[in-house]
Image 1 (spheres, helix red, strand yellow):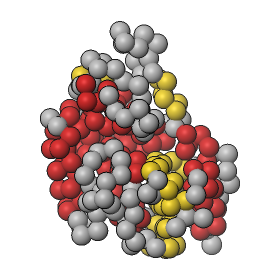
Image 2 (cartoon, helix red, strand yellow; image 1 turned 60 degrees about the horizontal axis):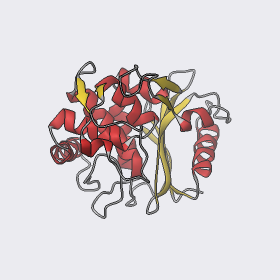
Image 3 (cartoon, rainbow, N blue to C red; image 1 turned 180 degrees about the horizontal axis):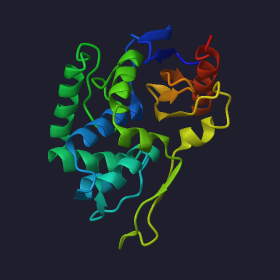
Image 4 (cartoon, rainbow, N blue to C red; image 1 turned 45 degrees about the vertical axis):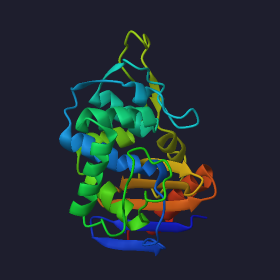
Length: 250
C-alpha cells in the first residue's frame, strides 16, 4: 500500500481522498511531468534538437530511449520518449534544447514551482528525477503540476498514448518504438469506467510512485497521486482501486 496517496476532483475543486499528501517525498521520474509541461510551454514541437554526448550517455542503469549522440529529433518525438519510455536521454535533450543547458532548465523548473505557489514544499535539482537530497516535492504538489500540464492538449495526448514509433533516422532506420507501461497495464483494471493516463517513477528513496488523471463520462476530471508503493504493480493496483472506489457518481 502506498505511503502517501491523494485523489483530487479538479472539476469540483475538492480533495476526495488524502493520506500524507503534504509529506515530503522524492518524485523520481514523475519529475518529467514538469519537464514536459515546460517543454510545451516554451518549445516548438517542430524544432529539431541534436542529441548531445551528455544526453546520449545517461547512466547505464537509468531509464532511456536509447538515443545516440548526433540523433536529430523533433521536440514532438522527444516528448513521447520522455513520457512513454521515461527516457532520461530525452529529458536531457529537451532541457538542452529549450534552455541551452540542464542547469538553466532546472532554474526554469524552480521558477515555475514558484509561480504555482509550490516553492516552499517543492524544489528540483534535475530534469529527470534521479535521487538527490534537495530534489523533493509532495503528493499534493505533484497533483498541482499535473493539473497545469494537462491544460495542454498535446500533453494529454502524449500521456494517453499506448505505443508510438518515432520517424526513421540514419541512426534508427526503423524508428524507435515506445510503449507506455502504465497506460497499457491499468487499462485492464477496473477503474469505474474512467480511462486513466499518467506517469510513473521509481528510485529506492521514493519507492514506486505515479501521477495519473482521468475524466469520467460526466466530464469530471480526477488526478490521483501515490508515493512509496512497494512495487510498480502495487502502484498500478492502488491507482485502479482509488479510481474505482472514489469516483463513483451519486
